[in-house]
Image (cartoon, rainbow, N blue to C red):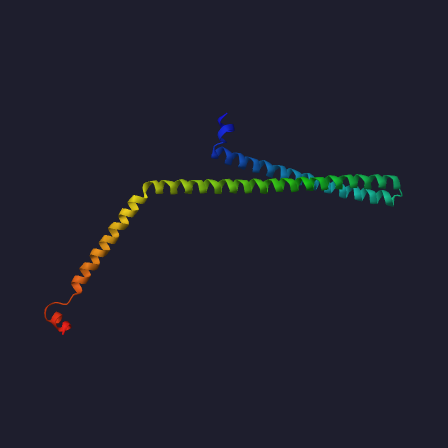
Amino acid sequence: MFNRLFGKPKEQANASALATLDKLNETLDMLEKKEKVLEKKAAAELERAKEFSKAKNKRAAIQSLKRKKLYEQQIEQLGNFQLRIHDQMIMLEAAKATTETVDALRTGAAAMKAMQKATNIDDVDKTMDEINEQTENMKQIQDALSAPLGASADFDEE
């Protein structure tokens, strides 16, 4: 019930996505194997049709060509299935990347929020006032140290 309300935990979602990708890969492999078998059957039917044609058995040759055409239709259908599976895999990988990106952004936002809670504007203003005050004090000290003393002070005035 909680999963329906709040979504699945991240680990479960990632495991589910990986399991789904594995299943899609397995299905893709199975379809590719079926396609190879059907290609061999279509090639065999073509050879049989050639043999029947040489033997002047036109009817059997036509039947072999019809079976070859059926195999080719099945091969085309398997190709379409493979395209759909590839599309699904790409979409799933993109969704996984999107989810990971959003999670990373959420983590960054939470860290930024925690940092902002640790620092408030009054503290920043107070710190900046202290820095300005210390800078002003340092300028006064430097001015006092750079003022001419004794005989050189008299020399500058004349």
